[in-house]
Structures are given as structure tokens and as C-alpha cells.
Image (cartoon, rainbow, N blue to C red):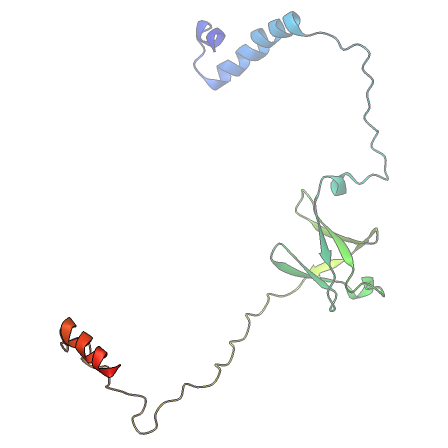
Length: 166
């Protein structure tokens, strides 16, 4: 910025001092204009408005049969005291607040949730039918051994053999 160079400002602290003391007051005096006819349309924050909830990251989840739901790769369960009839299969509002707290709301009421233990890895599936091997050879075969090393017939011989078969 030209004004900073002319003022011989070299550090960030000096730049901030220059802007606060000299540049911004002159700028505001020159260009700032008072607002006319503008009505403040902001609503006052009342005790009924939960600001933390309004500023949360919100997602919808479905309550499973064991009263659990997943969120951000983790599994959470609704506390036993909070379980109500008709919850299973219904939608639940999950709020991740700026403080990092996780809250869940069912039909407008907050319910207590706790993280479930780490999910166990899925059990290995049993292998299907075992591969059938020849009982005499033990699954070993030599019919392909050296197949690509053996010379084949010349092309004209292969064509003649093929034509003789037809």
C-alpha cells in the first residue's frame, strides 16, 4: 500500500498503529455517510431462543431398533430413561454445537445420548465350498507344463490340418 511505504512502515505492529491512528480516521471522515431511513430488522434474543442450537451443524438421523443412531462415524444410544414408545424408525435431529457438544432432539425435546463402545469389526465370512481337487494327484497337474516352450506347427501345416478335418 502506497501510504504505508510513504510512512516508512516496516513491521506489522507499526502498520496496525498507522492504520488505527492516521489512515482509518481520514478514510472515514472522507467517505463515511450516515444511514438514513434504515430500520433495524434484527429480533432481540429472548430466553426462548437457543443460540447454541441455532448456530449448530444439524443433521437428521433415524432411530434404529436398539434406540441407537450413527453420527460422524460413531454410534450413539439414547438413554434408557429417555426412550419413548414409537421412537424406533422415526427421525431424530442431531446438533453438533460450536463447543463440540452433541445433542439430539426427538419431537422437539432434547434426549440424553451416550456414545456406544467401539464397533466390533465384522466377523470373517466363512469360505464357500472348498475347491475340488483330484484325489489321486493332490490338486497338482502337469498338462500345462512347458506348453509355451514347445514349438507349434508352421502356419501352413496348421491350415492344412484344419482343412482336412472339415
